[in-house]
Image 1 (cartoon, rainbow, N blue to C red):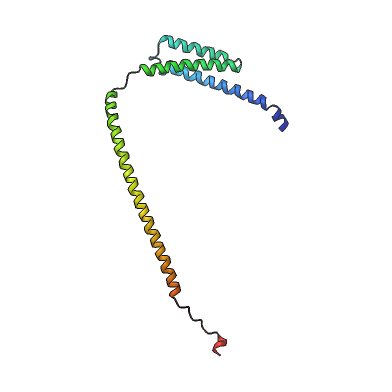
Image 2: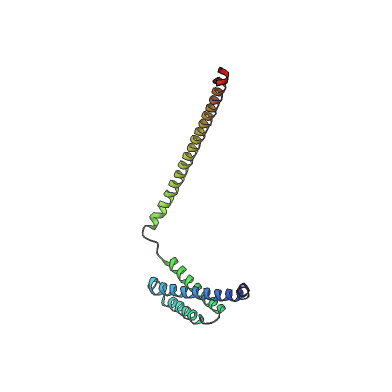
Amino acid sequence: MKKDAEEHAEEDKKKRESVDIKNEAESYIYTTEKLINQDLKDKISQEQGIKATDAMKELKESLTRDQDEIKTKLDALKAIVNEITTEIYKNTAPPPGADQQKDDGAKSEENAKSEENAKSEENAKSEETAKSEETAKSEETAKSEETAKSEETAKPEPKSKPTEEQSK
């Protein structure tokens, strides 16, 4: 059984790659159709829509052919979609209040710096506090150990009770 698996490992790998690329292509076709027909329908030109639709058709037709052709057509469709979305985002007007956000951006940068400085100071103080607490604890521990040692040495050894034989 292991020999069969080893003999067919290369075949299995090729089949898996083929299935994976087909799945990726089908998924990308679905996503692109949704993007063009619903999400960006009003935002793209008719020419862009036709170009993307043609690329999708070519990719669909290539799904029954070899893996290299599928990859080529998939890459072409990805390039077209990337071009369309890049252009849309470049041409999209900034949201209302974007100018205000720029002004706020400078203010928020100042706030961020002051917050950062405050955090740095707070961290430094907490580190100092932690160090002083640690030092106090270690001194306290050392003192209690010294006290315990001195008490042990200061205690007289208890006298042992005489055994029955000694008392007779």
